[in-house]
Amino acid sequence: MGEHSEQLTGDRHRSGRKQPRKQSADALGRQLLEIIVYRRNCRIGSHVSMDDLEATEIGDWSMPDFRAACAYSASQGWLIVQNDLLTLTTAGLAAA
Image (tube, rainbow, N blue to C red; front, side, top):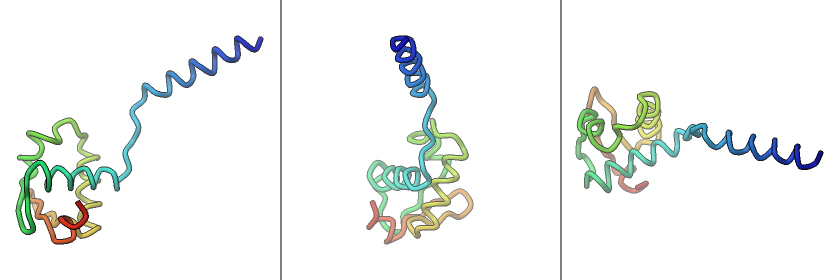
């Protein structure tokens, strides 16, 4: 009987790993900031268009994740989000 319950527990854990975990807004915002500062080599006041980012580094993100990352980064003062442009701030460079 113990073997059977152990097998069920093992299956339950395996199936739980297949489901993607939702990243927090903080993690998404920091990942976006990392892309802008380190991969795009942006400095304070530099602009990056959302289209440029979508075509490269964040192409596999879902739109809600991207919007959450932008919103969180803007709320922290790391980025200024206007229309389709992201502008790196002093706080954003310091947080990276």
